[in-house]
Length: 238
Image 1: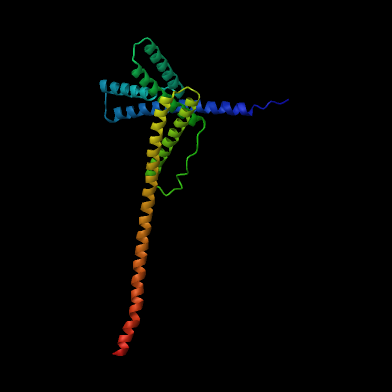
Image 2 (image 1 turned 90 degrees about the vertical axis):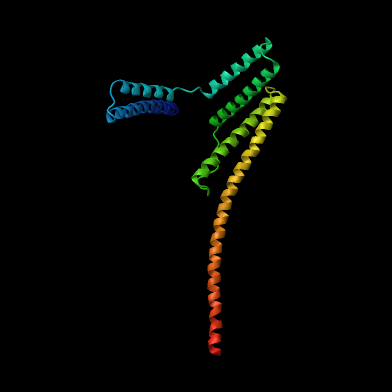
């Protein structure tokens, strides 16, 4: 019986391509940065200490730029550990109830935000086709940002409800988070509608201007045509 390794081969090729492009990107950045520094040294005839300092600075900047950032799951694990540490301190009477409550609330907000971001990564939803809209590039970019933020807020609100129904979030925190997200959704909907209204207003003004110009032209032509017979009558009378 023949075995089908096509799926495994595709996954392996995909992983290899990701690793290759990741490594090649870092390598190209490293080469480009050192070439740029070398050209600066040659062009400005920098020597000795200044050239060495420039290369060291370039290397430090590259290390900072390529420093790996913690993943969303790592951030979530860190926040969970912070919440556990805060609970230990509260039980030992090292922090008061108000401080502990604030820490819990802030951590719950962060966890909900990270969980929403993870969901969006796993199930990316296609937004509206903004390329075919009448909005210019700057407004399309702004509208895309607003729609993404709205999608994030809706996901966070849904996750907060799920946590509340599963008794992982108490009613006080749920009400506060829900109220905050609902207010933000109202603000985002207002900004989105105003952006569309502004674009529609500009289109309407341009249309009215064109219609007005066309109307003035037609009126002037109409006046000329109506004036010609009257002039002929006057000439006949004379």
